[in-house]
Image 1 (cartoon, rainbow, N blue to C red):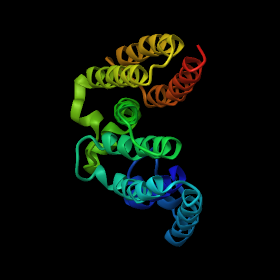
Image 2 (image 1 turned 45 degrees about the horizontal axis):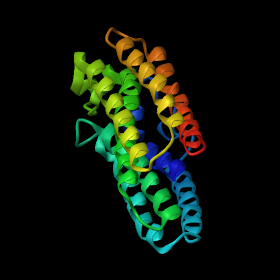
Image 3 (image 1 turned 180 degrees about the vertical axis):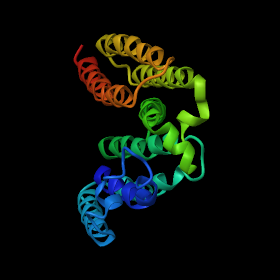
Length: 232
């Protein structure tokens, strides 16, 4: 579904991508691949996802059409709302809800805390990502949280990431997870605040992209903390 979402995004944005320096050489924007190619790849990924979800329980199957709908809506969010990054988080976060349903057979408060944490995380890291394209987005009329928050972007990013950590902590408390989980959230919090401080001033596009990429380590550390928390 992640790959299907990428295809949908590039399909919807191909006209915008041709006007942005960073994305004008993407395969669909440059004409290297056709719309037919993209639709065939999209159909393959959706069919594969459909086959996989059929192996799960009825509740997760009922939740799956929402995942497809969210993945389809996200590419168009930047035309309508000023924080399309929130829509990205909702689309990604729905995987948390489905995973919880698949493993528990029901939905509980911790699942919704993790879902909300994912939304806040996406707002934080994707706002950093959007710093790369601020001028191009302003010129072509694309909406972005980086444009909306302007000089207060560092505050918005810091607030989003701190809220993410609070929600992760609440999810841990609700599931009575062990101390090791909370121990991993402390350095993650310090690192997130450091990133917010970095973007208080001007940052270059390569720096913004590098900061965005570093969030893979946030996910890795939180995952390790969750595993450790159920051991210790």
